[in-house]
Image (cartoon, rainbow, N blue to C red; front, side):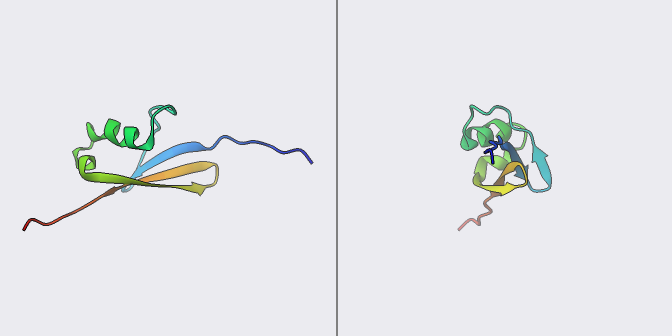
Length: 69
C-alpha cells in the first residue's frame, strides 16, 4: 500500500463569506491583515483554526464585539 500525500487548500471564512487564500507564503494573521482593507470589521478580529473539512484547512475570522465603559 502506497502512501499518498495530499496538499490541503487553505480557506478563510468571514461569517457566511468564503475568502480566497491570497498567498500560501502569508501567515494566517497576514491574511487577516490583507482582508481588513476590504472588510474594516476585521481590524478587531482574530483568526481561529485550522479545522480540516474534506481537503481544506478552514480558518475562521471571529469579530470581537465589546462594550464601552
